[in-house]
Length: 426
Image (cartoon, rainbow, N blue to C red; front, side, top):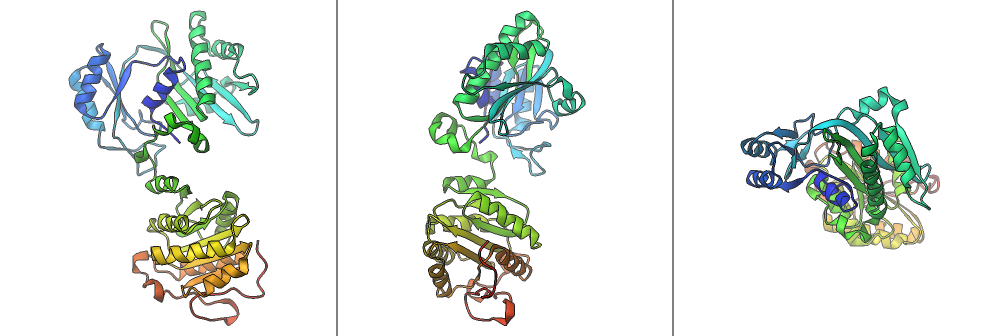
């Protein structure tokens, strides 16, 4: 889960991290009012979206008067900002951050990330920050500073001092940088963050050290215990399908293919997508329905998959361990009847009560193609996709969907059953 810059600054300020004076605005008039509250004669108006590289895309504007602030806010609010990180569709700008413009002497970089290989939080720093940090880091990799934090004791002051001196800060500025580093670490640890990035960490002309721009990401699985962070979530910055999936307890990620996937278990979902690719198809999504496969959850999964207009076939692949295949089959049948699936559907069940599950599918009277093994299911859904019209809206009514020819010349109405000699479940 990501949050906006101004929200990240509010959180870090609570842990002793110094940030510029500023406030969020949702209209041009409110932006002018924020500038008046801040005082001074120069301000910065920043578009608030979940993306970096806003400056290069025109999302950050320097203003020298109230008229400039009003104009900048009007130019940004209500637009879609496209950066090198958003993709061609960009992200909508519904709010701006108005801040005091600081006289910057130096720009530094500080980031805290979770190193999964070491199972430690690692603090990374570089003496040059700002918009060109990626290019600078590639040119000067030897200048990157790292401190690995031992979780049993947390980040120590001496580690923060080593980083501050390594960044070339003067002695009067070291204590300020240490407070920022330790505060950022506490926020990372206590808020279940997965990333805290301060870019740039600036030294002003009068020797002050502040976090000029901040980004924070959080562990979705820990948000049940962080209600103060959850309330900062901005669904307008996310794929609406992924937001809907979160409401139903589903894990959904949109992809570029045309074969929808409904799977239980992240590992099985990855293996299924690999097998679809191996069979010559392209998955349209990653969707893990989790351990429960109730009719409501399965129906929500079908609606999510079908909301992608590129989907031309769907593969349901469920391995029933804690669940039972007959429960899953009942959920699939009820969901298909409720959602009215207009594209070919392949279902592969394995695990507990698999024979009963297959019987329920067979007797449903629905045009469901079944398979025993994962490889077989992938081949069948790719074949069904090739026989499906490009536009899902042009597919015949659900009762008239034709199943692709089955192997060994086996026919039948309604459910298509797999070859009895096919290999066992993968």
